[in-house]
Length: 129
Image (cartoon, rainbow, N blue to C red; front, side, top):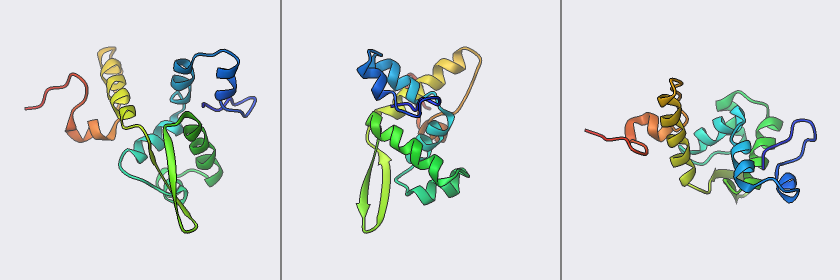
């Protein structure tokens, strides 16, 4: 799941060693680059080349983080010719990020993690006019 910076492996190895899947999931979302990729994919599918251009990241960085998110089961891809189009597999992830926004706002640390929420489409517990 989340990439271990020292060992270069994903947390799925750590799960096999006894770390809970919940801890591994949150560890995988603890990386800013992966959150940025998730935010972008929440708006629709994208190729690696799209992500590198939009996020200003190296191709190897994007590929590494997409592999991690795929290991988590949060992202997958579809092949079309020689291109791969990545997308979120679990729309519930955006609910989780919206809930995190509310929690952080309640602690005085307002952030925008969910582009859907940022667009004024609501989140958990939010009322709209």
